[in-house]
Length: 218
Ligand code: C5P
Image (tube, rainbow, N blue to C red):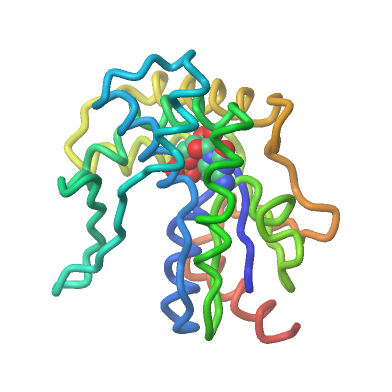
């Protein structure tokens, strides 16, 4: 069991996916669950200040993570392919808002724990090492400078054909970091026993290899 936490744009999504592939382990993208709650709530017209209704959405979430024949991941929400919508900046902002609600986190807790199956799980998020899998054998807190994280996120969006300025992405990252770190419930912080890995200036392959070496050493 490997927990990888860190802020937006630290590269943890990519690192978690590659490490899981190399080890042949399952993958939990916990951020996608919070994104799905935000998306489902907006599709159902649930107000983002109606905490009880949001918790209900979280506990009834009808979501599936599928792998298409070409290996691409597809996310299906109540029968609709929402793969692109889940990754949008708007959904990310919504996710950060619903993630601050304790009842929503509670509603997603067991669902996240259920991803832990043989031969192993790589769990990617903000509170994998501190809350959901506090008993993980290895915890990695992946970080990078805010400038580098903004540049990476900007490139990712541009590659997807989304036209947004670097300044806007930067602002979004700073806002999201603040909201995620300052919230009272499950704030973003490294677990006491986490290994901190700063990926600034490191190619992704090198970061993946460091994590694989750590897994092999425990
Ligand atoms: O990682 P990703 O950008 O998909 O996460 C979206 C949002 O979901 C984060 O900004 C954070 O507020 C929330 N989140 C969380 N706990 C997690 C994963 C994500 O609060 N374990």
